[in-house]
Image (tube, rainbow, N blue to C red):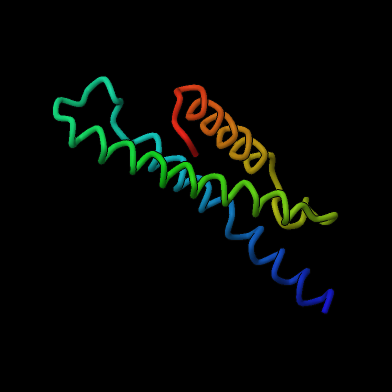
Length: 101
């Protein structure tokens, strides 16, 4: 059973950097609330931001679970650590803006 778990962690570790980049990119492409004109647009944006943050939080949780002793083999550079830091910063910013994640 430990071998199956380790294989799953390695596969997720391989998948995570791309998924995290995509989730952050999509969140960053959402418009600012200040640019909205209609109240219905606010609701749509709020729901989109909430869903994007939920996805980012899930990826952060997966990244913490994947924290392998052989991390250097699965993620050879510091790019993934930078992505995690950026994701956590986005979540903090979202929470400071008064949204509920």
